[in-house]
Length: 241
Length: 194
Image (tube, rainbow over all chains, first blue to last red):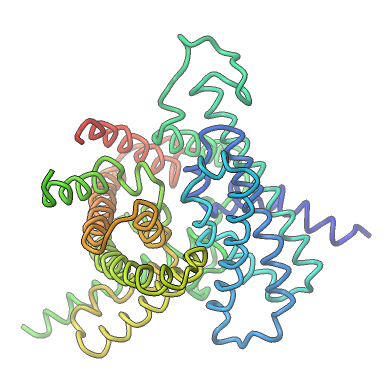
């Protein structure tokens, strides 16, 4: 039998890759991938938070009352993020400057709350930590790959070394629009090869609305709810007439 | 420079030049998720304006009145996220009880906004750029107006995309991301504005 701890780690890297398969945490994915180094730095920071938040939340899972679990998780995550922020400020100030506001924003990264809710709240601390390692490595790989593509096409460099002459740079890829294009093409490739992802696997109907660790589904539910509410309002107006 | 011009510059800068979605990448989730119809997108936009302005007021007061005197500025992330979450809950309860019409229009969007990174992002930028109370509110208004502009434009484009013949592998979110990229290029044009 395969080792279940190793299985968790590989699950996060390949089968349930947070960026390409579940499409979580899009903000840092788009914002911090101007180069492979930046993407890697952001990935490592997120991984650190993810491992420890999974560990702590899983250890506290029987203590935190069910009704206030989300605020409880948020406090744990925010504390860990603050620690990571201070550590980075002290030891890697250059990276801290480049990533700037996106480090404190790890708090609202859906991967972390999503994993806490979907995995850590139901499993033992050690397994949860392994899940955190796997998800974190998966996220780091994805960010590094996207950052690598953007850096290569946009600035013609690989890890800061010039490989493409200046005349052939497509500057827009290191700017904001490039992030959208690269992610779009990667998602399209995934659709093309029919790899399962949040965008092409339909969920069964009647599943509870709410964030089961999946932004896209969460938003779809919200949109349906909003549509219904708008229709109800229109009907109410007609009745009032 | 007079105070008024300065405030105008902050508002235009955060709404158009550094658009929160298209150049800062904050609030991508609702931008991609709730932009299928102009009507729903507008509702989301209004709710975001409402929450962000309130949040920038409250976080500014808390930062200057509590965190700075006690010298615990390092805990701003924890404090802000909790304050924002509590604030959204409170607003929801208040609207439900006292302003039923407004609650019906905005209620469904409110829980979504709690974990929207744009709200926390605004609170943190206000502190980073050391804005005072009025500047924070103006910045909050600018950012949320920029979000509303972007999401409504996106919904308008997506309503038209429905009738287009999109290649199979680009259907769904890839084509939306391409659209967002093109919009981001258009918004780059504003960069010479200030």
